[in-house]
Image (tube, rainbow, N blue to C red):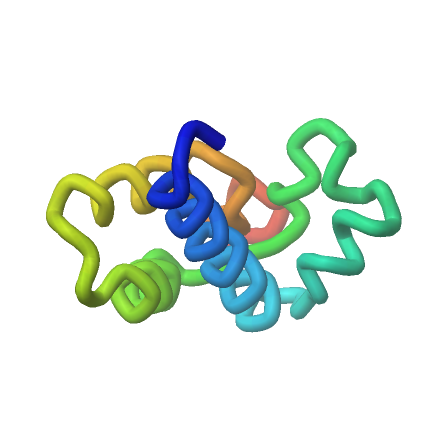
Length: 95
């Protein structure tokens, strides 16, 4: 991390991932995914589904009060990171 601000944003990202995986189908404990090594597997996040609307609500809740720039940084990190997929077809399920 470059500074305290980056560390704070990283912690917000982790909280978003925790809530997103808890609310995904199937539900999962993000910390356990990390500890078990599953999170190191390529595209592990494709096994989990969360509707885009719910993911957006989670992001908005956790980024409330951040500057527009910092909110965009967090949102980008989440959407390009390992958040559960918002496309059921991508995970092998038909919507």
